[in-house]
Length: 207
Image (cartoon, rainbow, N blue to C red; front, side, top):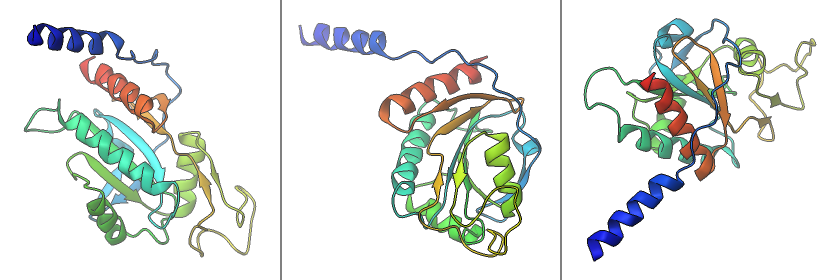
């Protein structure tokens, strides 16, 4: 009887699992070039041929980034349960720093280690501010809002010279990118959002 109940519970869990949303093509990412937590170059061409998931954070953020990093680590661990044990991972997670002046590769490495980042799966990127801002805002279509900078307008107090203020607002969503560099969906960091994202990512991997 107990085995029957367990089987019914398992079948019910599968039946209730939220299916991924239709994966629309939201456009193609522009070319970019950054460096990872080990100081190694990473470009859009480096990720071509791999399904990947992007998000946006900065290591000195005191409020929203720690929960986002924990959610990223949780996602990483879920993805690893169905990845092959060896060879190139079929999917990657890429966290892009919105405070590249502070977030050097060494700082990103320590941050990743704090949250259990597996470098085979989870990469953290930093680079020149203006290029990062264009990539996030125009490429990923996600906001970065800081009081000391207006995008596209000259300023004596630009992000190039000052760290990102702690009250900067930025996207907390995950963005799914397919093998061709096309944006395929935006997902929240809560439990339902992560579950839906994982299912959508696996759908792209299996295509």
